[in-house]
Length: 257
Length: 354
Image (cartoon, rainbow over all chains, first blue to last red; front, side):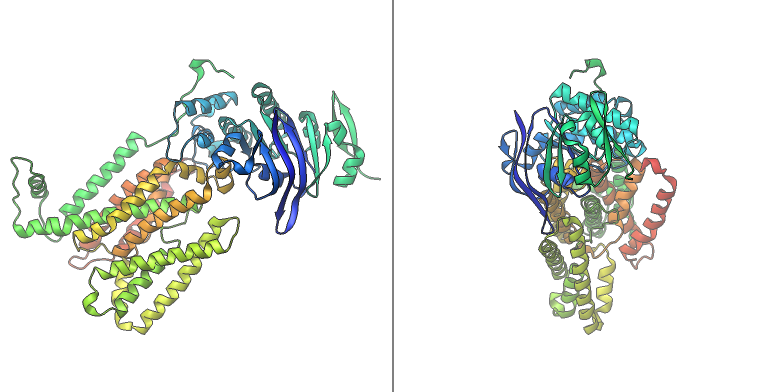
């Protein structure tokens, strides 16, 4: 089943196309990494899919045009993990994860048993039970990130968009976070679309990569297909070696001579 | 995925905790009692209670107060206390709402030009209306009209900017409108310098002893505003995450913000119209509650309503008794006693609890 379908999606910011006529189809349960140099349009494309920025063209989510969906309907289909989420320091972990239930509630309604249950499962799944009543201001960066993912999970959306989910994490926490996301994808059939900078980490986890440059999709395929020395040289201006690691690949920067 | 039943934790948002709610309500009741009992004429608490019981037709009670004392109690003091409570509740709720909606801890209820608009309306009424028309009935209406025009203008200016980040744009529009209306008000005042004293005392704020008409005048605005704000208190916590995250959680940010800002602003305009400008309540009350209890907006808003009412009733008692029979302007009292108290709260609460 098709989770996301983009047809000629264009986003202009300040009169300049930041995303330029992008076509792409993402199937339910896929893990897609959006890669590309700074300013390629990765974040903006994610924001267009979440309808946080005006776009031209057509975006269909689960077969329905995103423009026809009410905000709350959209939020029941798509959850967003922003790069720098706002985490009010006085909020408890329980309260923050419960915010994920917002799209399932009317503006005047209170959370019911079903909502508390969904939040409890998300918290348990991310091993946050010991932190339940802790204030967000007392958590470390890695813990906060898990809390934000738990909020997205409590939202029970089938598509999760992540903007640089590992940017603030050390290498160990990067692996833990991505293993966790991959586990959730396997269990619940989530569709994951993540903008990522670290090509090696992206190549280790993503099934598929969309390489963006200047707002256009310039390569689409498995990490092995997309991450070639020629493509990286051309689009990032970087000199690298592609090295096989297990059944995946790693990108090693090489100082030009 | 399944989690064994015994491991499912009870995930709840901290609502109104019974302890803090009781403390807030007790504070309000004590404030109301002091407000009714204390004044230039000593009525005595027992006599006040007897009179109240007699008014409620509780069998076996009859008032021991003289007709004059009855009139002081029911036509002057009780309405004044209720008016102070309504205004305090409104200012504290509006302050907390603004601080969240604009994500600015310094936002106060006068942010969008309400104060300057009301000031201009009142100054024009005092300066240009013939003495006969200048009674208490015209002044609040003029102030309310001025405040409403200022806020509508702020909104129009903010919208015309068509920026993506319209919370910050709205604040800038408020600053612009405030500057313009303040300049205009100063000009009118300079041209009519004989009105200086009257305008000045209005601007400093006080709770009028004009009885029930003022209560009736603001009650509909204030109660609708507070009901709207309290009904949306869960959504207010979501808005606090910022526009993008609130939108990605399914909130129609523009619409909800408009409803909240309109409610807070119209309620404030009504309050300002009868009392003039009372500073500091909208900032000190929500922040004190936040520092002491560390709760989110869903509990902060109702607590602000209760504590704000009690705070202003007490402040008004000080305003009318400190230099009796003269009155100290209420804005002076709220800041003079509020500022040191707030400094104390800042000093004694640990960073982790805020």
